[in-house]
Amino acid sequence: MSVVQLLIPEKYFLKDPNSTELGKKIIKSSVQLLDELGFEHFTFKKLAASIESTEASIYRYFENKQKLLLYLTTLYWRWIDYLIDIKMHYFSDPKERLTEIIKIVTYKSELTSFSESADIDLSSLKRVVMTESDKTYLTKQVDEINKEGLFRGYKDLCHKIALVIEDVNPDYAYPHAIVSTLLEASHQQAFFAMHLPSLTEIDKTQDLDGEVYQFLIHTLFKTLNLD
Amino acid sequence: MSVVQLLIPEKYFLKDPNSTELGKKIIKSSVQLLDELGFEHFTFKKLAASIESTEASIYRYFENKQKLLLYLTTLYWRWIDYLIDIKMHYFSDPKERLTEIIKIVTYKSELTSFSESADIDLSSLKRVVMTESDKTYLTKQVDEINKEGLFRGYKDLCHKIALVIEDVNPDYAYPHAIVSTLLEASHQQAFFAMHLPSLTEIDKTQDLDGEVYQFLIHTLFKTLNLD
DNA sequence: AAAAAATGATAGTAATACTATCAAGAACAA
DNA sequence: TTGTTCTTGATAGTATTACTATCATTTTTT
Image: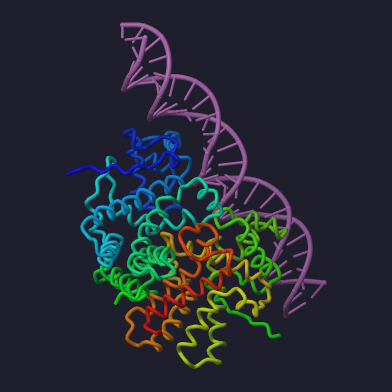
């Protein structure tokens, strides 16, 4: 089994967490703790305690918890991006390609074939991205963070999928808008199914991922006239 | 000109901010300050300073800033809900009704005819809802808050619109899901246009509200087979 | 005029989000 | 092998936040 290294550029950290044992522990444990506590109650002090290190040591890797979250979400999107690249080798029909992309984005099971040096629990990471990733940009510092290039991972992914959409329907006017809408919806609808069920028909007692997939495919195909 | 009183039930506050002058100042100023600082940097201490009162006094009205945000977002959704009720008197064709609803949701100018005893800047409130409202539910306390009934305003609105969708196309399987998706999208796409333009075709240098409207209408009508 | 309610003033606490300093141990190079 | 550098740990300290509590004063109600 091959080990994939997703390269995260250095603008995300002060010291590369992938370069040391402590760094890898920070990544692995932060995913767990974020999943458990949520971003608001997650602190570097608690993280330090959980890996038997110190606050000061963690601050040597990441400027603050926002940057750490940015690192983790970027890792997630880069990895989805990578999975898409691989699958695209096996499908050339743009309609099929679109279907496969939506599968990768929605199904937990599509994620498993990934292993990083700091072996991260991917279900946890997905839950963290689902619940916390919007907070990376819904802040007064968006423009600043954007200038530093820290939303690159998400933007690249969005653009990659938009190109497939242009391929399938060159007349459609909103390829990027529909991609960003549906990427967000994929997380939101799953979240609603679990916590605010009256906002969606998707039923958590059924096959949640499958239902989200059906909803997204239906919306996308109708919108792009692919039926 | 008639003054509309939107009733916000008492579960949102400790003391009704609409019942006193100080309370109205709290509401009015909190919208301004939230717009200016963002939720993370907004504190009751700063709010107290801005209205020349004290932290302790504000805590007599609201348990904490999350509850205050919940109050404000509910005010916003209730008011959209109310505007829809009015407009529905003038339109009986469900397709037209849908169009009018999307207009209310997207266009700033549709909001103006509202005046509350604590005269709130509606453009500010809309910006606050756009940027901060997701944070009311993206938290570990969702279920608890939901049990208290504090998402009622948003859920009621979503259901009201879903009924119109069922009216226009009884065979469509996801009325609530598409409504929650597009309500979220209406804010997100405007936010992206302003801060992360590569995620959308919507152009802030053009008529932003109008373009969001076009995108939503297109997506909705295609999805529901209304063309 | 008395009672009750609302507000202000002040103080205090635990937790958060850092920054700084110094010592100890590991790795690595000459 | 010794010396140097790099990494981590230990500890301390600061400003701010998110509250809670108490008591005095002002305003409103009866």
